[in-house]
Length: 131
Ligand code: HEC
Image 1 (cartoon, rainbow, N blue to C red):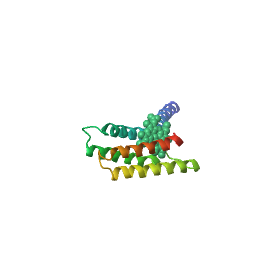
Image 2: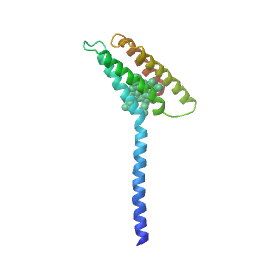
Image 3: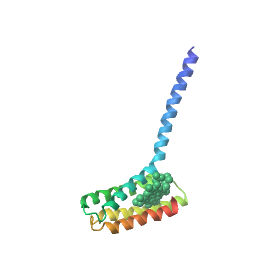
Image 4: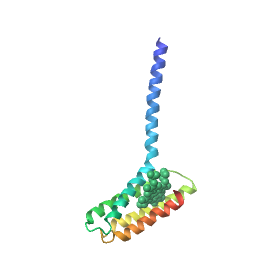
């Protein structure tokens, strides 16, 4: 009887631990896509704001700030090593500088078209090689 209880307990604990591990892995697996999706949402909002009559400088600044935050997130979301990953890191570094410039030198709605063109090019430059 004792053995049976120990066995059932062991299986139950094992099951719970396996669930916890599976959830942790799913969270890690979602991180790269989540980073990209958040960045894309902010970029879409900026594209809508661009040229709109109700474009708001403060909102543009806030969106550009979040694009910069996501640019800083990329290396953590896409870990790796080796030569190919070094090239990826160079690309993400370039994008980080673009996002940094866009966020710090933004003229709000006025400079938005230029910022969008540069950021959009940065997305494409990396996707062309690594997506
Ligand atoms: C340094 C590289 C890099 C930069 C810069 C980059 N991306 Fe990505 N992006 C990737 C990679 C790699 C994937 C594929 C990720 C995957 O499938 O797990 C991806 C995937 C995506 C996806 C698809 C996500 C999904 O649901 O599968 C979107 C949307 C996206 N990127 C938007 C953007 C936007 C918008 C920008 C610029 C503001 C950008 N990316 C900049 C590397 C980059």
